[in-house]
Image (cartoon, rainbow, N blue to C red; front, side, top):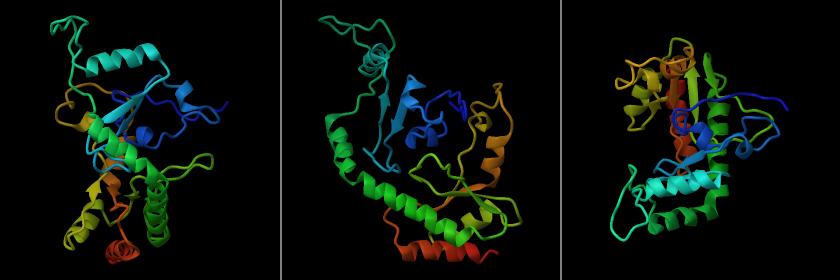
Length: 227
């Protein structure tokens, strides 16, 4: 068994990719057997959305029971409202859960469109100097939820964002690392500067599944004009 990577998360969705894509961390071995917890976010920008909330998956029945207890205000089994532990009102309502389940019928089409968008950008922009796309492994199939590029030349992410913004097209930097956030910057962290470099040089391109070929071509032409 070839171990490809080991990730230590302060929160399961810190990097989003590894919870949204459910990519295997160990070749030929299910992620479920390697992790006791796996989380999904269903925010409005996800492939499947309930407008908010999420889901926790585990093969550990005891831990799932504990999470459900916390998510339902940590209410003790008593006639009156009694709380021996700190709880939260994190339950997903049956209405929004129904909205999410309904979208499962079109999940395959949406993933296919996300991959199409990624392939379109890579075909049109991959030949530009100093542009790099996220590599795809031979042994898995990512859902390409968000198409991102990194830049290493004179054209910077801000140049692209401003050029698109002039045409009322939104794009964003890749997520700022947690240890660089003002709230956490006073704390120690372990690791190198990989995430900082990605944040400094990366940009998230428009990736909505409702985008037409005309929309994609327009984005690409505006970016190409900067070279």
